[in-house]
Amino acid sequence: MDNATKQKLWKTADQLRSNMDAAEYKHVVLGLIFLKYISDSFSALRKKMQEDDYYKNNPQYIDEDMRDYCTEHNAFWVPNEARWEFLRDNAPQPNIGKLIDDAMLSIEKENPKLKNILNKNYARLSLPQGRLADLINTISTIGFENGQTAPDALGEVYEYFLGMFADAEGKRGGQFYTAASVVKTMVAIMAPTENHKVYDPCCGSGGMFVQSERFVQLHQGTGNLSIYGQESNPTTWRLAAMNLAIRGIEFNLGQEPADTFHNDQHPNLRADYILANPPFNISDWGGEKLTKDPRWQYGIPPAGNANYAWIQHMLSHLAPTGVMGTVLANGSMSSNTGGEGEIRQRLLENDLVECMVALPGQLFFNTQIPVCLWFLRKQKKRKGEVLFIDARNLGFMADRTRREFTDADIAKIASTYHMWRGDEFAPEGKAYADVKGFCKSATLDEIKANDYVLTPGRYVGVAETQEDDEAFSAKMARLTAELTEQMTESAKLDAKIKENFAKLGWK
Image (tube, rainbow, N blue to C red; front, side):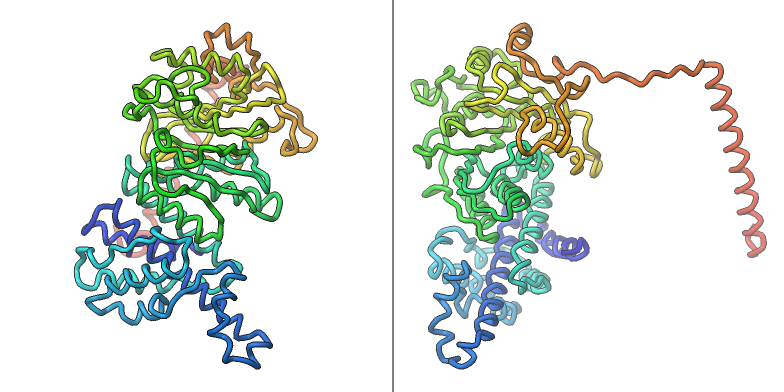
């Protein structure tokens, strides 16, 4: 979908901001986009069924067999009153909000996997007359009829809107959305493969899962991952379910939205890949009630900061041959308060920490502080070593406040890791080598000598600057001559412009 169409959609959706909070209107907009998609997909599937030779000769069986046909093609059954054409035609009616709620209820009733997931608050919206109709008419311009590309188109729109909503919400936007640059970097490093379990204990809107599926499809031609997640915020939990459902990704987000530390929805899970972006430095996580929890194998995390609780929770769910990656605040790499230094030391002494990546600031919507990536394994290839990568100088400013990584930046970080491990994702014919100012493979003895601090800058050093052997006097003479030449040329251009204006009668 072209940017002009996405921007038009966003402009229409953003008009709701004057009437409701961004945290609310994202569910209004994304719910309607979801409804449009499943309705278009249903219509496309019905058309395909009608073109089948059997049903051409036996059209009387189409309605009778349509449900089974939907099941066979992994599509949602959409009742008449929930089809987009019906809602579009009734958009000008004053009861359009109730009609949308009824549509959502009927879809949930017909498709149990969507139970309690869809937004059903449209009748209670306090909007000016016609505003909801305008939004419906704009969303009507999106076409999802192409069965093969529809999920990609919808995913693109959904991802774009999630990013825009996160930007609009500012700090709170980070609660449901992790910047694409960070997610792509984590997935490229972890390199998930098909037929394995992926887990995110604080999954937000499910971006880690979507990117993992995308990575597997790109490298192996099929997604086929087993998705397990948990999210405590009920509206964000539903957002994640919708985000996965629109892409046809099977998922298990637990029986309900729940606090990961106090109501683990997957207590017996052992996952092959664990990715997470937990809330930074949370102090009200209830740690004082969990001092005897069996998850704290490497030390009781402080009640005033959940960083090391997240690490140990994820380790408790990690399969023996699995890998986990998490985003944490930079303080986690060096803090000694509340016993964190001792926990970090035990993690290192048990040879669980594999790689540390320092990220630049301004990658996130919700915070400008720089953060880091931790990667841990129970069975490391390079025992007794930790790879440090300092990526703080990578990326570009996408706008005044936010930085992004290019594909080349992500490839540089990930390929360094895979070359260091010597695995199948390493660039062919290339071998790992320390690069001053960027990467360093450090031994546990070196880390011990640094008091078990894991800040990459301590190990990679400072990049060497290019030698400049041109004498100062010669350089000044050259630069002065160049400046004089440029100023002379500028004066000639100014005179020519004045001359042309004079010919046109302007002086």
